[in-house]
Each structure stands twice: as structure tokens, then as C-alpha cells.
Amino acid sequence: MEFNSLDAQREACEAYVASQKAEGWLLVQDRYDDGGFSGGTLERPALRRLLADIEEGRVDVVVVYKIDRLSRSLMDFARLVEVFDAHAVTFVSVTQSFNTTTSMGRLTLNVLLSFAQFEREVIGERIRDKFAASRRKGMWMGGWAPLGYDIRDRKLIVNEAEAETVRTVFTRFVRIGSATELARALAQEGVRGKTGKPIDKAVIYKLLHNRTYIGEAVHKGLNYPGEHRAIIDRALWDKVHSILGESPRKRASNTRAQTPSLLKGLIFGPTGSAMSPTHTRKGGRLYRYYVSQSVLKNGADTCPVRRIPAGEIERAVVDQLRILLATPEITVRTWQAARDQDGTITEAEVRAALLDLDPLWDELFPAEQARIVGLLVERVDITGEGATIRLRTEGLASLVQDLRGKADVTAPERKRAA
Image (cartoon, rainbow, N blue to C red; front, side, top):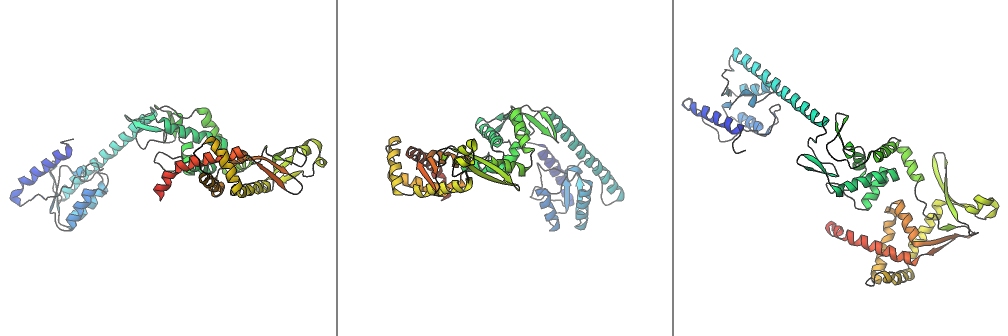
């Protein structure tokens, strides 16, 4: 405002100082106005400046419009009066006449301050009551808008792009069951929060517990129907919280059990029968295997290789893939296949894309590793001496196109980081 209550109080105080010119009063140049700061605290910039000037002997008289303009706290005012007395500073209220050098004046001052403190507390209670009543009506009462919403006309409005990210977090958490794994996947995909920072594990838990997303307003642990539109439906919310109700250790165990088997549908035993993934638990540990279907159907004597440890064979296949992808023969075959999809692609681009996959592999989410293995491997045949891997050349070409697309997206970020 062009003219507010602080300006009016300032004019009244200046007029009072001018009326005391015969007593030798002179107005200092500094203004000790603390607009926007509560009188219930001494931590106000202008007040701290005033006290510093008093200690340096630059102020003889402190003039206020009313005593509660200096402080609304009885204890704080007592401290200020001690500072004034220590430096022989007189305190004057323009609208309230009293003399602090007499016992009656001090009593009057304390009575006035008691009412000032009482008024401050009543105002605080009214504000808290109004806030609680507004929340009961589902109104948004300020603060930072959560991911998925924008603030418009003091109301929460759905931001559709961000809301899709929130829905993704909820639905993928139900599928994965692990905030740690979900955070890793979102980081790899470059998904960001409202401030542009990655969505880490702590942010995920905060999102999953925010009842704003189901259209509710929360105040002191109580939930009320909100004025804003929900992003998450109640059924999905209940699924998420049924998972969160389990212990983190149990959820981590379930996540490991649900880890995709890299060679499911790709691995075959010596008899030509498919080998299916299975697992067992001993001593609290998870052991995964691939078991021959002929053994499961016809008995242990029908196949010379009844079962093999999943971790060992998967690691062997991945290691062979890494070696094969670095060979010139595979690079040329992949380039020839990739040119059918994109005639502009060069052999150097194919080689760079295949080489980029090796250091990236260990950072990939298990589901993404399984997708890539399914894309690259046509068949794995187990024999009594080892394993034979048959690659998909067309799958290599598709993978190169994917890797090139990711490289194009991340190139600007790499430049900024450099």
C-alpha cells in the first residue's frame, strides 16, 4: 500500500519528536520499522539495529506509537527495559503517558504489557482456529504445492504432466514393492521432481504417504474431504499401503523373489526340453535355479543336466554377451542389420553404441536387463560340457537404435555437466 499503518505511526512519532525540539530532541536518520515481523519476538532486524545503536550511545530516547509496537511479550519487554536502564535511555509512548522512572509508572507499564501479551495470544488462537476450520472444509491453506499440483487463486489445480509422474510412482511401486529399486529405475530414466531434482527413496515415501493425492486435506492427524481433485484413486492407494504395511525386510525379500529370470523361455537342456526358473529358501537365503521340464514331468533320469544355478548360468551368458558385442564380426553384422532400419547410421555409431552397453549393464534395473537379454539372445543350449548362445542380429539392430536415442537425450546433459 502507498500509505499504511506504519507510515501513520511514523508521522505521529515524528510530530511528537518535533514538539520536544525545545528539550533538545533531534530525530535520527535511521528508521527502525519492522514491517511483517511479529511483536512476539526480539529477533527482528530493525530492533536489533536499534539495540546496537543504543549500546554505541547513538540513541537517548526511544519513541513508539504504543508500547506493544516495541514488544508484545512481557518477558521480552522486561529485557528491553533493562537494556534501556543500563544505557540511560528514556522510553516514550506517544499515545500512552507514563513515566518509567517511578514505581507507579512501571506498574502501569506492566499492566499494559500484560494486556498486549494477552491480545497477541488471543490473535494467535483465532488464527489457529480459522486455519483448522478452513482445513475441515478442505481448503488449501498455503505452503509449497506438492508434485502433481499447481496453486492458482489459492487453490490446488492438477498439473497433468506432473500428475502422470505421481501415478507412475504409485503404480510401479505396487508392481515392484521396493522404494529403493523404484528410485534407481526413475533415476536411470531421468525422471525429476517439481524442483528438478531426482526422485530419490525419501521423496518416494513422502509421495506415497501424502493424502492430498486422494483428494483429502489433513490437519493435526485428521483427514477431511478436500476441495481439490484427486490424482490417485482409493483402490490404488489401498494397494500401496497394504504393501507399506509389511516390514521393509519382508518387502525386500519379496522383491528379490520377483526379480525377472534373465533366461526364462530362452534356455534349453541337453534333451531339447525347456528349463524353467524356480527358487527355494534355506536359512533365510534365496536360491534360484533353472530346472529341466523333462525332469519335472518324467523324473530325474530323463535328463543328464537336471538343474543348474540360475546366478551362475546368467552370469556366464552375460559375460559372453559382453565379449561378443565387442568383436568386429558382431559389429559389422549389427551395422548391416541396422542399415535396414536407418540408412544413415554409420559403423562407428554402431560400435560406440555396443561398447556403451558394457559399462552401463550393472546400473540397469533387473527388468531392463531381462528385456535386453530377450532382445539379444535367441536361444541358450546347455550341454554336458558347457553352453551355446545363439544371438538375434535383428535384436542387436533394435538395441543400437535404443542406445542411440538415449545418447541423443543425455548429450545436452553431458555438455552441461562438462
